[in-house]
Every structure is written in C-alpha cells, then in structure tokens.
Length: 161
Image (cartoon, rainbow, N blue to C red; front, side, top):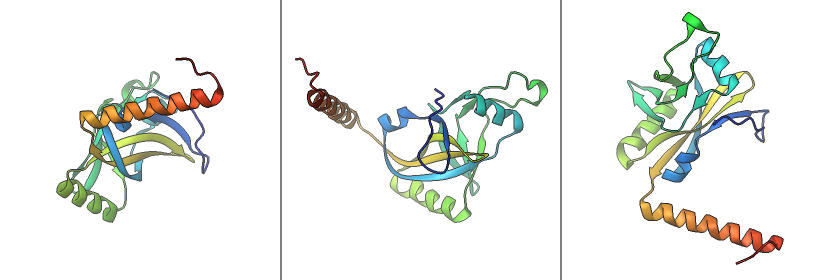
C-alpha cells in the first residue's frame, strides 16, 4: 500500500494512504499529528512497510493513540524491533485533543488515519474527523464516480456503449 508520490506543499512525501476510509466514511475535518516512533519503525516507514487499512484513533487519558496501524518489523532490526500493531502515540496540542474528544463523545464522530507522510525529517499522520456512511451512501458515491468516468471518456472521444 506504499506509494511514493510527491505531495503538493512543503516537500512532503506521501508514504501510505487509507483509501478505504474515504469509501466507508464522510470526512468532515482533517488534522495533522506527529507520531512517536522508535528508530527501527522509522526505517520501516521509509521502506514503505506500513498499512493504515483497519486503523482508527482513540483518546485515552488526554492523549491520542493510533490503534491497528501496522508497521512491519525492520528486517535488520533484530532485538530493537517493536510489536507491529502496538498503540502508537500521536502528538497534537492538548487543546486540539480536547476539542476532538468533545466532538467524538457528543456527535458520534470517529477519528480515522487518512494518510502517512514525511514532512521534512518528521513522520506525520493526517487524521480525519469522520462520520460513517450507510450502504446507500456508498452506492451513491459509486454511481457518481461511474458517471464522472463516463463523462470524462465522452469528452476524450473514447466513448463506446
């Protein structure tokens, strides 16, 4: 799931994206958070050995954690490797965490990791404040995507039906 595209601003390099999140959720707001990682984990991230697919974020004791976020063990790391699915602490300002905690508790939102990228030498995670989609919402999204593809094909002159 690793892709190494260049992002638009600040020389950020996208490591992984959670495309399933956009399929399963409406993303209302996006936030940036740093991640507390160990050395061998950063080396695995640089190699692109990460998976955001079934991950989510949780606020516990005023701190934000990413759960289910998989970083494969670094092959040359031997005893310094960490558990691939351990809870990873996310770094945000306390007031932002408290704001998110209030929204998640009251309105039925959930926090989902959307992408992982390098910003300079630091690993950052984009977190989305999301609402779940119903099955009919997913069907509407698929129909809209298909209609856009059809229009695009028609505009290029490659339309056959």
